[in-house]
Amino acid sequence: MSRAGRASGVDPHVRPVASVDSPYGPDGRASTKVPAARAERLTKVYGSGQTAVTALHDIDVSFPRGRFTAIMGPSGSGKSTLMHCLAGLDTVTHGRVFIGDVDLSRLSDRQLTQLRRDRIGFVFQQFNLLPTLTAAENITLPLDIAGRKPDHDWMRAVIEAVGLSSRLRHRPTELSGGQQQRVACARALVTRPDIVFADEPTGNLDSKSGTEVLSFLARSVRELDQTVVMVTHDPTAASFSDEVVFLADGRLVDSMPNPTAERVLDRMKYLDQLQQATEEDEDELSDGFDPRPSRDDNPNYDHEDGDYRSDHDQRGYGSADYGPSGRA
Image 1 (tube, rainbow, N blue to C red):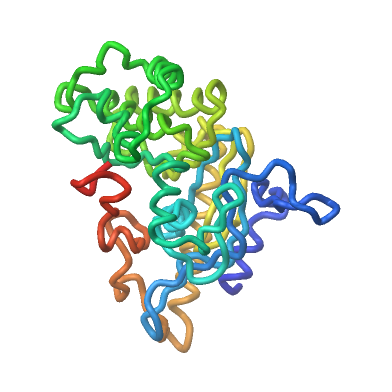
Image 2: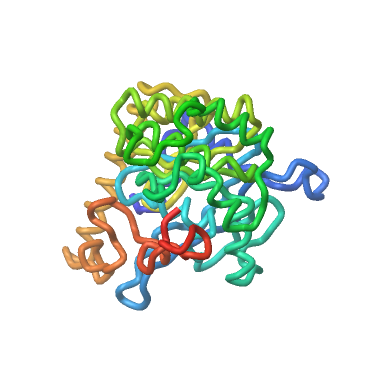
């Protein structure tokens, strides 16, 4: 079976991706409740000519407001690439990406920087806290860069939710890994963003600290009316979300509402087998010779992370987004 045939035929008993919803109502007019983020026919290609690799194929997906969605897939499936494109950290080759009703392709670099700063929150696997600042100063850093004063009532609610009221004067070296990541979560929420993107937020944490961070992200959706999209490889982490969407070979292939760790693990095993079989098919093309570049030949493939590097990964995140050090 071809790659497209495999990806489109994951399981006849599994419903289609639930998050692939049109932003338009049945009468063809725009819905009154615009998703927090959405992609229309999103395709991302790295390289050109014989070294071109398509990391994302014609993706249509939307993320409703007030929901916690996890993105999962085998190594190299394009999940981090999808998040980077949705967050405006990477350019798209074809298609469009929206934050709310704003088409990112129509923004200048300066406008895109301002949108990321004011309307998007980020939580990375590396905490990216400035070591010379206290926890409180790290939390308010995005507002300081933007020249805005914090909403003290909102900030108090975020700090109470993250459980760090007694640690605000401590510097990062005086905090545990879990506490540092909770500071990063509070920083992501302090601007009241339209959406928070979290890229493997528990990857550097032990199970207890990871549970604390995931519980906070889930509470921020339920109690603070936030929207969270998280990339993860961990079925337990995914079980904290409202829904999981799955990628395989750069395509959306499945979704799972109300996930459990056991169900997610079973689905991931199936997708791993699917992707492995697809790669074996590719190896057999043209009597064993495939003229298309392998991941080993493509300079944009990150073997450690198992995904393709975004444009920002190759040149570093913009200091205008995060501060003079280039870190959040």
